[in-house]
Image (cartoon, rainbow, N blue to C red; front, side):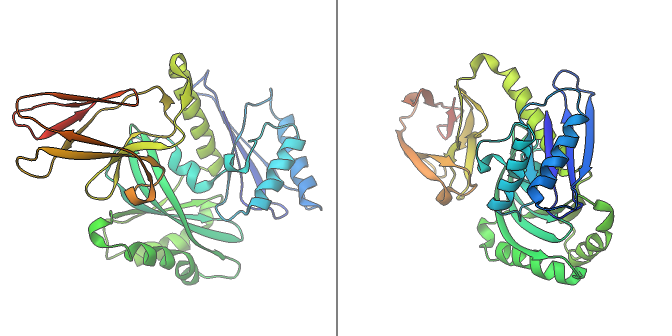
Length: 345
């Protein structure tokens, strides 16, 4: 499963390739090619892709591309066209090209925690970008909503100016959210193709958050191409494991609107269909006999940023069970000690 990353379209930039194998979990291959200092850049990129091809023993599957968050659509088009002309399998649409933040956040993780925010910095050789990401982990899959806050040219900039231009605007946006509805800021994550050069930035960020011990400053140890390869590997393994029931994949997250304004995701958008999930919900009032459950579809963590696709109204009778069928799924009210709990299955 291949992943490709590129930090910029400048001459001498590194084109990085990482490859994992679904047949051999111990297999890992990393290759790099420097883009020639020739014009036009499309030809230089195509030549770099062709040189990478000669180093491979066989033709690769569809490549997962990951590019900096500050790349424009026209720049993505240049990269995609160069790879295609070199004989690589590329996404049909630009939406299939992910950015560094997306590939990092969509990779499988081994932790579960409540919705929180992470500030992700994408540091390139000449440009830096920041993304404030609302993060939720379910079933070892990280669900995220990206908001690009600002980006700045890094040439001749010191650490203080970088923080002022791409960190402070993100924090201002974060702090503008009412505290009652705002999850905690968990980490500041730095993604860089040259992590050895960002020590001053790490020191500056640690100093900035020195009074907030709950915020961690983290530098990802892996290259963006490795994140892309891992994501491709995870999705491929997921598809192989469920190949008996691959009829379709959910295009959007499907969930239930909670009273705190956030969505409880039941079917993440990458899950194969048909599928079913269970959730336990509790009503808020004593002796409550009616409840309305809103089912929403979308990609954002907040209810108002999604679309309500249906609303299920349930009326409770003591000592009875009530079932309601919706879109092939069963909604079932169950008494557990006292009639205050809901179970969907």
